[in-house]
Length: 172
Image (cartoon, rainbow, N blue to C red):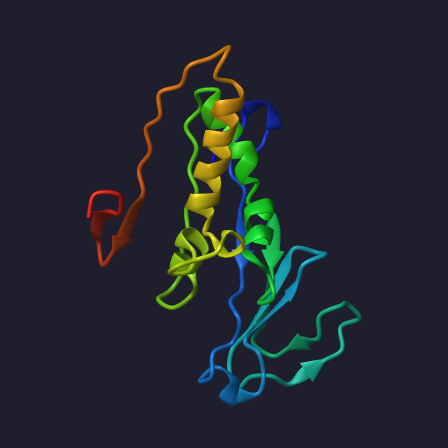
């Protein structure tokens, strides 16, 4: 997620969500990515290169393994609400309602879970709504609570870039 209220001092906030392993991923019996949510770290292991080495940290060092730190890291058990909170979507919506431009951006390979995170599940219940539905709900509830003292004009885009083609997801 990016943007944010200028007084927060943070202009870009990077959150990583690791999806659960799928059936064909589990064949190796070893996860390719491990998450330490407390330290906001992920460790990526090159498949077939997993000779453990004790390095005295919470991660087991492995040949061809690399650790990365982010503002927040969420493991496979993370809920949509966890992602919403970690991305600080309400802070972004508050900034947007004050007139600042904000962006939530999902990036990853095909099958990584971007659409699920941003859009939610088909026929979703509120708990499985994606970031967009939850953000819009929060923004409209906030606007309704301020309707006596302020008026709002809303403009939003919801786009997808796939194979170098930009698609407007609101007008398709």
